[in-house]
Length: 204
Image: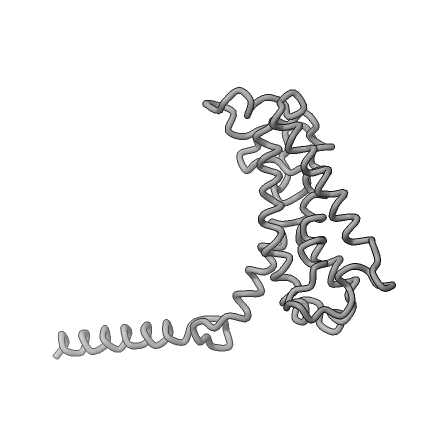
C-alpha cells in the first residue's frame, strides 16, 4: 500500500521516520549519490561481493571429509563456522535490501554494512546460548549454524530476542507471584501504615 512503512527490522524496511533515505541534508555529495554512481558505493558493493565469495568457499570446502569448522573443534570456544554464517546472514541482508532499494544512496549502503559488525557478536551470543535457545536441538550443528545465519540476517530481531532472554537469565529484583516487586509492596504498605498513624494522632 502506498505510503505505508515497514518495520526497520524487516529486510528492506524503511527508516523510523518513514523517509526513503536518511541524512541527505548537509552530507557530502558522494554520500547522497546513488551507490552505483559513486566510486565509494561501487567499492563497498564489490567488497561485499568478494567477502561473500570467500565466506561461501570457507563454508563449503571440505577438509578430511567434513565441512570446514563443523567438525571437532578444540582450538577455541567458538568454532569458525559461527562468524562465517553470521557474516553470510548479514551479507544476505545487504544484497536483499539492495535488490528492493536498488536506487539507494551510498550512505544507505554504508548503513546496511553496519549489520556486518553487529552480526558477529550477535551470532556468537546465539551460539553460546544455543543450549537455551534451541534446547535439545542444540546438538544439531546444522541447525545451530542456520540459527546463527538468521541472527545475522535479522540483526534487529536477534537483538530483541536476546534482550528478552537476558531479562529472564540475569538476576534482578525479587518479585512476587503476580509479577510485582516485593520491595515495592513493602514500601507501599509502610506508607499506608504511616498515613494511618498520622490520622490517629490527628484525631486524638
